[in-house]
Image 1 (spheres, helix red, strand yellow):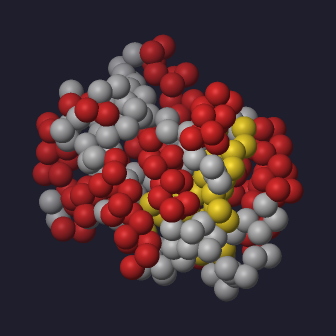
Image 2 (spheres, one colour):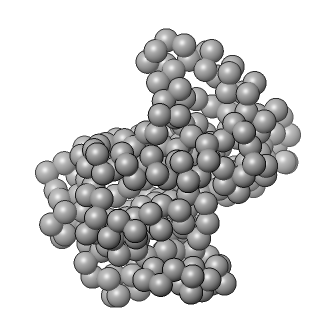
Length: 254
């Protein structure tokens, strides 16, 4: 992915990593469209950041995705980058089925079906562009599990394998598939995460991500240094130790 000159749609970018990345990409000379469910947040973003376009979208709702895709492509026919950012992360206790099933289903709907439906809505258009990118968003937890978030871990592992498979299928087309793999970042994704010493500061994360995109435009995976501890535990042969360290160190794992 080139760092500038793109038209980028980021659904799930009204806060956290999504919004920070949207602003950073805008500053690098890209046209950026931010998508989200809450119109009040979209209006605030448009007012505070002139030049950022917005569209209402609920990535858990197939009809909303279809309508938003039609709207975005009508307003931005040169769209060439889709970032499937939207996601949720919730604690589950699988010892009590009545307490986790609805949460697990919502997590899979948002984190896995949402990206699948988004890609389906845009992939034909992207293949018609001379240079296009699908950026998926997995997690360090796709490779090392946090014990309290089983469905989140599973959904992000699925996104990793989806990314690998789509890259194979889209080889030979104009569409690159890039997987962004965040570690824990100081956002509101989980209660207490915004102030967690374990989590990476948001500005540091986005600065490193943008630097990696700029330095490695052909990268298949965007990995800040902090996530490599989780990403490569199995390859290094210390997976069990990484799992234990993560679940002892992360306050969300207790």
